[in-house]
Every structure is written in structure tokens, then in C-alpha cells.
Image 1: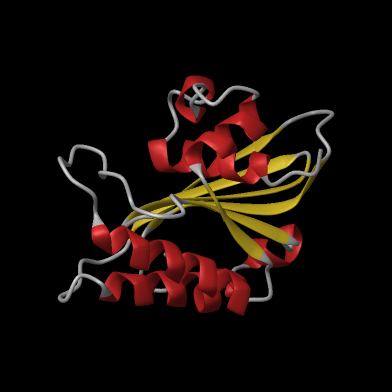
Image 2: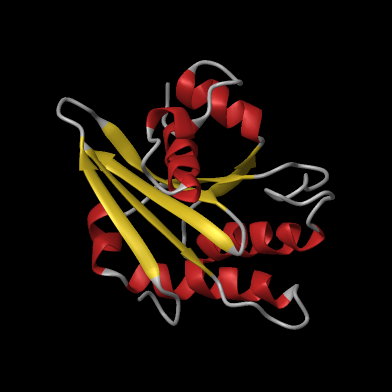
Length: 167
């Protein structure tokens, strides 16, 4: 548990890797967060509680990333210096399995973005295709192709963290 949110975790050591301390976020009510540092990747995934009105989930995303994440023991170890939140800059696209855009995703996206900034982590939005191109070299390449057994949100968050690495 992180705060009141049940969170799953996976950790990988990549021998020879030299990652910067970056946090990547795949935002949504079902979210993924990945932290990279030196030769390690920590992936987290969970689901924020449903709220009424729905836009309040964005406030939960803010609280989660501004207050609860920085209190975790792993935060000091990874100590992210930069963050990347996956996001369409103009209009949210349809959520997975939905037939139209999820307007509340914009609130959640900005909840994570502003929460990380409030926690002292300079964080930017990056479009999905830009993340894929920076992380994997091709905008059509998906994170799921590299980590098929990992939760979809967690693998996308790893892509965000990799896209945040300096070239």
C-alpha cells in the first residue's frame, strides 16, 4: 500500500546499464510508475479509487505523487531528478476499450504532473509517439513488446522513464 492505494511492484537489475534518476508515469485511474537509477528499474502499478464527481481522481493523483510517493523508502534511493508523464498535449484519446476520449484523464494526467512538480521533480508531458521514439527508436514500437508479462501500465511507465534519459 502507498497511502490508501494498493500498489504492485516489480524490480529489475540491468547489468551494465547507467540510468539517470528518472520517474516515468503512465497516468490514468489505473496507472503505472517507473523509476530508473544506475542499473535498476522499479515499476509500480495500481488503481486509484473511483470518485464522484470523476474529476476528483485527479486530486487523488496529485496527493499520491506529491505526498505519498516521496514518503516511500525507495524514493530516497532513486531520488528522481526529472519526470516524464505520458500525455496527449491537446486532447485525450480514447481510453483502452472506450469508444471516445476520456475527458477525466486530463485531470488525472495533470494531477500526477503537478504532484511530481510539487514534490520537487521537474516534470514534463510527452506525447506517446515521442516517448516510443526516444525510448525504443521507433514510434510504432510499444513497451509491451519488450515486457509482455508485465502489467501494461507498468511497461508504458518504463517507456516514459527511458524516454526521459539524456541522450
